[in-house]
Length: 117
Image (tube, rainbow, N blue to C red; front, side, top):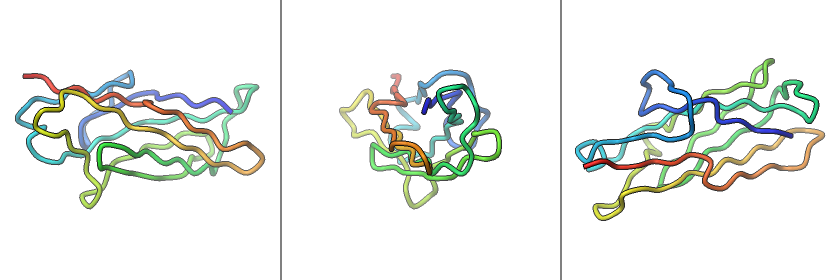
C-alpha cells in the first residue's frame, strides 16, 4: 500500500501541495485546526477505497475513510485541535491507515508544522 500526503492546510483553509503547514506565532498561541488531503493506493497504483485513515500528533487527531478514488480529507475537529507549546517551533503528525486485505500502514512524521515569528 502506498500513501501520499497530497496537500495540507491550516484549519479548513484551501489545501496547498506538500506536507508542511506554516503557522504564525500568533496562531500558534492557541490550539488550531489542520487539514490534510490523503491518497491511498495499492502497489499497482489502484485506489484503495474504504481505508480507515487516522492523523494524530501534537495533541490533535482526525480520522476518516477513503472514497472510491482512494482519497480522503482529514480535519482536526474542535475537540481535538493541534497545539505547539510556547517554546516549540515545530512538530509533526503521524498517519495510520488500516484497510482490508493490506498490512496496517504507519508513517511517522507525515506532516510537519512549523511556527514562524
